[in-house]
Image 1 (cartoon, rainbow, N blue to C red):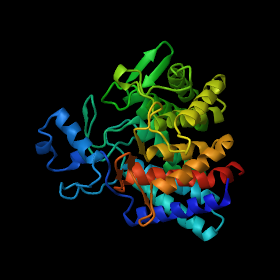
Image 2 (image 1 turned 60 degrees about the vertical axis):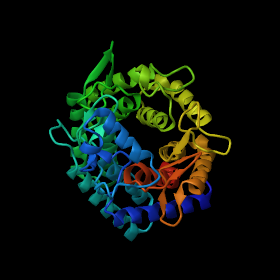
Image 3 (image 1 turned 90 degrees about the vertical axis):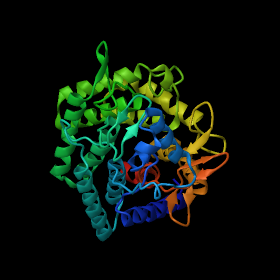
Image 4 (image 1 turned 45 degrees about the horizontal axis):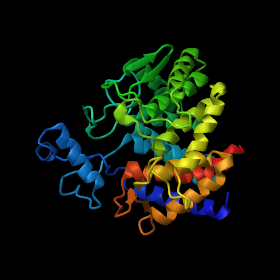
Length: 394
C-alpha cells in the first residue's frame, strides 16, 4: 500500500466523519421522496405514481427536498456503517487520547443504532426511515430488512469484539431470531433462501448471503450448531446458483436477472466471512472465480468502476466504495483498490465540502450529499483502505 494514499485516505475519512458528526449523522436519502407530506397528492396514491416520484427525486441533479418538506432523517444503515468504520479506526489508532475519543463516538453510534430498531420484530432488526415503494409492494417506514439487519448486527459485533460491551452482543445475538423467525423462506431440498423483509417473498442473493454471514458469525461466536447449519443452508442456495463465469444474477426472477458491481461485492464479502471462519471450504474455488470476475468485469482500463458488468451506463458511488472495501482486504488486489480509490478521489470527491457525489453519468453529476447512500459508504471504504493491512498484522 502506498503510504501517501493511506495518509490521504485517512485525512479524507476524518474530514468526512467530522462533517457527519456536525449533522448528528442524519441526512437525506435518494429514496426518501415518500417522506414528503405532498407525496400522496403528487403520486396520486398509486404504485406507479410513488415509483415515479421516488425516481424523479433520485435522478435529479437538483435537490428539491426542502420545498417538498422532506427533512433530514436518522437512517439505521448510516449509523451502522459509520459505527463499523469508527471501530476499525479506533482499533488501529496509536494515540491513546484519540483512540478513547473514537471509542466514545462508537459507543454513541451504537446507542443511536439500538434506539432505531424496528418494532414488532422477534429480535433486533432495522429498516429504513422512509416508506419504500418497490416494483412489488409498498413497504412502511422501518420495515426491517435482512440487509440492514446484517450490516447493523455485524457492526455491533465489531464493537463488542473491540470493547467487550455486552449490550452490543445481546442486541446482535437477537438478530438471529429475526432472521430465523420472521423472514419468509424459499426451500430447495436442503438449501434455503431468506426473503428481503417479513412482508415479501423476494429472494435476493446478496440479501440471503449477508443474512447467512451473520448467522455463521453468531453461530461460531455462540457455539450454536443450529445457527451455523442455517447459515450453511442459505450459503449453499446462492453458491449453487453462481454462474459459470463466477457471477450472480441479482435474483433468479426473470425481471431481476442483472449483474451489478456492488451487489457482487456484497456476495463475496459474505462468502469471505464464512471462509475465514473455516466454513464452506468446498466453495473456495467458487469464491476465487467470483473475485476474478469482480476484478475483471467491473472496471474500465482507467479504473472507472462500472455499474453493470455488460455496460457502463453510470457510476454510482456504491460501486467504487464497495470495490475499495472489498479489494482492500484482498492482498492480491492492493493495486486495484489503490487505483479505484485514486479514481474516486479525482472524480467523486467534493474537495470543498469533503463529501462524495452520488452519481456520475455521461451528461451530469449528481452532487447531492446523501448521508447513507454516499457518505456512510464512502467513509466505510476510506477506512477499509487505511486499516486493512494494519488490522491484518494484529
